[in-house]
Length: 393
Image 1 (cartoon, rainbow, N blue to C red):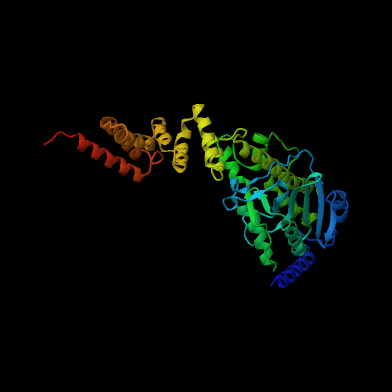
Image 2: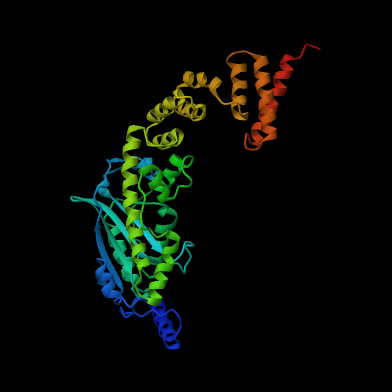
C-alpha cells in the first residue's frame, strides 16, 4: 500500500506539472524564491541545513542558557510514570509542525524538533521534509531520535503530535517507535496557571511564567501555509520563521520542564494555583501536598479547605479533617458538611437544621453550586432533623 500511494502521488505530481497548475511540487530542489533567491537546496544550506537523504534535511541548533532541572519522579507529570525517576538527560523534548490541526489521514508532519541535554548543554535537532516522497525517511529519522530516550516531553503531544506521528508511520508501513513514557506538560500547565493566564498555550506560559517573549515569531496557525507555499513557489522568509518557531517550541519546553522539576520538588512554583500544585504533588507525596495547602490556608485561601480535607482523609488524619469543617465555604456542599458536623460531632440539632436548609436551597437554585444527588441528600437531612425536633404527638 505505501508503494502504491507513493506511485500515485508521483503520477499526480507529474500530471499537475504538465497541466500547469498553480502549485507544482518541483522535486529535486529546482524551485526558486519569488524574489529570485537560490533554489531549495542552496537556501536550506544557507540556513544551516544538511541533506539527510532524498527530500529530507537536518540541522542542529545550540540553545545556551537553558537550565536542565533536576531528576524527579515522573509521576508528577504522568500517572503511568509514578515511581520512575527521570533525569533531564533521559528526556527528549519533542514537537511537530504539521499541515493542519485536524489530525486526520490527510494531515502530515513536515518538520520535527528534538531537544536534549548533553555534556555541552541543551541542543535541538530538527528534521525537515522537503517534499511528500521523502516522508518515509523523515519518519524513520524522527523515530531514531525518539527511540534514544527513556521519556518524551511535549506540549499537547499526547493528544496530537504522538498519535499523528504513529498514524503516519502506520500508513507508510513502518513499525511503531516511541519512548514508553510520555510527559505532556500542557496538563500540568493547565492545573497550575489556568486561573492566572489568558490561556495555557506554550507562548502564554513563556510570557507569563518564564518571562520569555519571542521576537519575529510566526504564529503556529500560519506554519502550515508556509510549507504549502514552499512546495508551490520555493523558499521564502516565512518558512525560515516556521523553522525557528519549531526550534523555539522545544527550547520553551525544556525551560518549562526545568521550572516544574524545581518547583514540584520545593512545593513552591511561580504564580501557580496552590490547589493545582498540590494536586500534582499528591500523585507522589500526599504529605507534601497537604503542606502546600496548609500554607495556602494560612494566607486566607478558604478554597484550599475541601482539597485539604480529602488529603487528610487519605492520610488518616481524622481529627484534623474534622477541625476544618467550620472553615468550609458556605456553598451547598460546605453547608451540607457543616450540617452533618453540627449534628454528629457538636450535637447541635438546630444549627444542623439551619445548615441543611440553606444547603438544600442553594442546591435547588444552582446546578453549579451542587448536583441533584446532594440536593436530595440535603432534603433528607432536613426532614430527618425536623422529625427529631418535632414535639411529641
